[in-house]
Length: 312
Image (cartoon, rainbow, N blue to C red):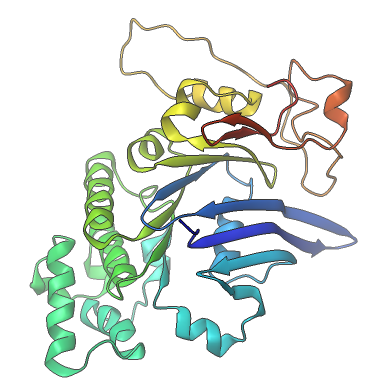
């Protein structure tokens, strides 16, 4: 099977004063049709920047992004707009991503009309069908964002992204602003809609439990680089990079009597202004040696499990 999305050597640099911030530094991965891939890491590691580069909301500094064989970074704006129906995004903050002057009806009608999917009665029918899929009553169609709860706004955002029947959807922390009961409902909704529509997901989150529930594969990102990737259960059961192990050891266990080793990394995350050669974790890893100061390739551990760590 050919990948639906292929990212190769993606870089994004920002100029700040006399220095350069390396937000994304040589990220490469693939997403196949119908699969859900998780991208996890601490805040500031570059996850959202990767998503925005894929969607062409932020221009990449270097690299290549191929969607269904088309190089997105070489397409002019008009070409990207024509492809926009096939790849969509659900944003982290539903309040900021919904136009406050648009009713729910207009929010959902706009992509249908812009992409020529339907007109008139057929367009209205499509909107109502999508509202039913996200479990929102048709009475919400006349409401504006300020008249909706956080969970309702996020479901409108999901409906807006999926109403064009996209083949690929980026989900950037879609549940982080929701309380737990609504979060569980939205996660279950996303899983059901993916099964029904057959779309591929790139699920960006720092909520590792959600990633484990929703995703087939998981990629771990640190300091603008992907350091480990593999089948979700394999990575969770046998993490090989020290950063992945530290990240997973922080997941709460719903058992007060259970005991688990908590791995604490020393020091602070280095500044993305000054990237050292070699492993980005070299100053914080308790097992780091001289080999970690040199560029680290990805080592294939079998079964699709890869890690950028010489110790593995």
